Amino acid sequence: MAYVASLKEKYNTCKLRYSMMVLVLTLSILVLPVVLPPLPPPPLVVLLVPVFILVLLIFLAFSPSKVPRSNRGY
Image (cartoon, rainbow, N blue to C red):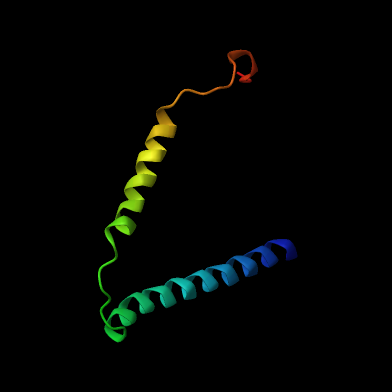
């Protein structure tokens, strides 16, 4: 019975910790844009980085595997 109580206590502690983290992140998202000065837009190359990552991931997803059929394990 003490083990279950210990687990519940750990769960409540983690729940409180994560709730506080979410609250701090939410407040920072709401407050920082008001406090910080506006920033200039980033260069075009920086804006294209996510597009390059997406293209690379799509290429890797559809490229054939180099593993021989006998060693796949299924």
